[in-house]
Length: 166
Image 1: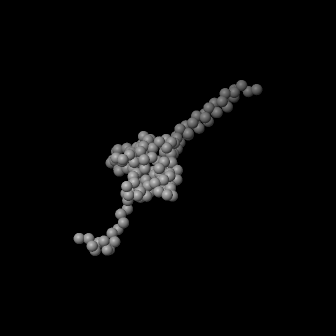
Image 2: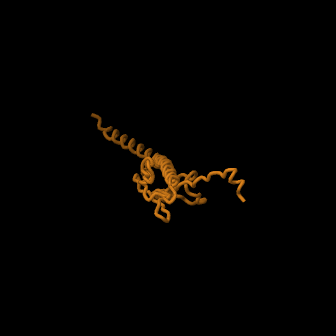
Image 3: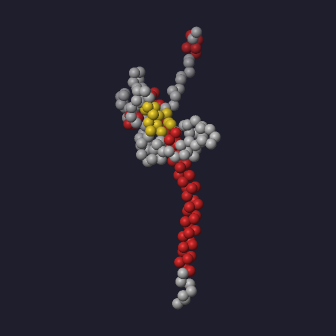
């Protein structure tokens, strides 16, 4: 039995584990950034779905009815008319928190006019997000992204209306 090589295998294993840990530590920031980009993309998708649903609810409102839903569940099943309408397929969860715990923006009557995330995570995206550019050097968090119903599209005036205008 050779006694001089007893600790060599153990040292080799420790060195391999140290190199593996260093490689994982170097890859972690890149992995975290790609995970956050995926969450931001999903937040933009879900926020757009809520924006479209809020606009559809508003556009489906008859004269005298509220134009903003009192709860998010009213976007799932709108029973103000027969047959009921479904402006949103399902109540999406916030991709950053994992729960449907959205921050709701309400109008004077208490109706929901916009939603946002609760996550106070600095946003990686700067373009194509629903927040004005804060300027150079200022960081935006994903909680500042607010998804509201798109403004109603005005129908162009007909030629007959334009001819009778004073």
